[in-house]
Image (cartoon, rainbow, N blue to C red; front, side, top):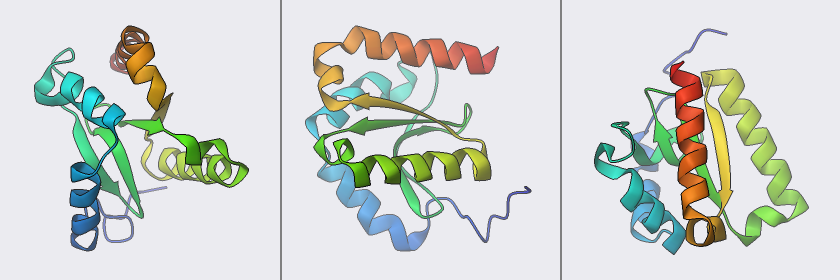
Length: 128
């Protein structure tokens, strides 16, 4: 399906206040992961934080790779939360070809090296 920028715009102005709030009021896990991703620190890849794609706001997004990283806390552990996440991932993949990597918030603290290694693996896989 061809992409229609008017139908599924990126970073719409109406989302700007929410994106700003999410950046300023993010979780501790998001703050820690951002310190590792920002400024092309991870393998020279540029990441964006709280990036809008259509109706969704992604925790972290790399336009070059079409890769999204989502950090999940307790709300994602419910049936409703997991169904929402599944619909969202399907939409991102089908509409934009965006792949989603998910990690639990605690993994950023407890298994930080494994999180970074997984991001590197997927990055290398995408880049070929």
